[in-house]
Amino acid sequence: MSVMSLRLPDDVADALAHLAKATGRSKSFLAVDALREYLAREAWQIDEIQKALTEAEAGDFASAEELDGVLNKWTGNAR
Image (spheres, rainbow, N blue to C red):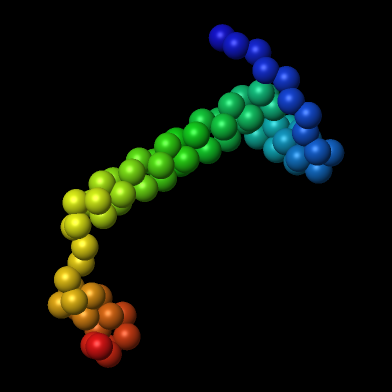
């Protein structure tokens, strides 16, 4: 297991300490948990962007009819 130190703004450190006390978890546990969630979300977003770029490069775009369907679904107005 690696060790990392970082500087936290006072408000973040205070919130972390308060949450740790309220939940009975360590500050380290909460920080690792938050970092895991952040990394998973960012990895998902990058993967989705890469998929969209691949589709765009292949010319896989929505047709005018598909766009009209979505527009009509949400507004009741087709183009």
